[in-house]
Amino acid sequence: MKAPTALIALSYFAHLGLCFPGTATRYRPPYTPNKCYHDKLAEIPGDGLFGAVGPHLWNKGAACGRKFKITCYKPVANGQGLCTGTTITIKIIEGRLGNRSPDFSLSTTAADLLYTGEGTFRAQFVEV
Image (cartoon, rainbow, N blue to C red; front, side, top):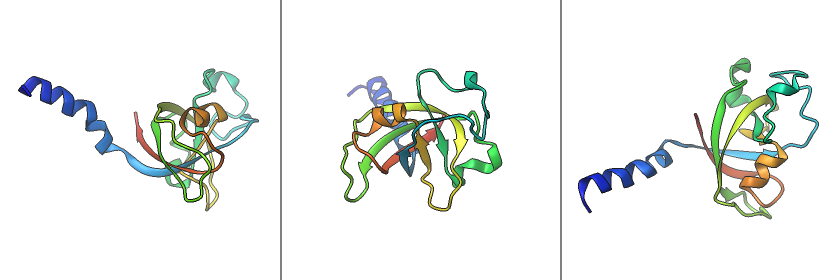
């Protein structure tokens, strides 16, 4: 393989090493009011690609409006669904701050693009 081709191939996969492991699940409507934008519907992406972060990423509300690339890589033990292999980018509109909250709670639209089942799944994520 020639050097330029090898560099392109390596750079294509470089992002995989920069991801963080976590857990994700889905959460259902209503999506307003929420902790970031309250009742402002204009701040919620119309394509449905949004979600909430858990206490580890919330940072006293600093996560509001941030965007994360997320992909499912493995169902949790006894999971009834499969990962789709898709990677999506979501906008954070909410905080789920309970002690047992997953890293991400995704809108139903976002979760359906990543995972075919219900419940929690293992995800990789990186802020973009």
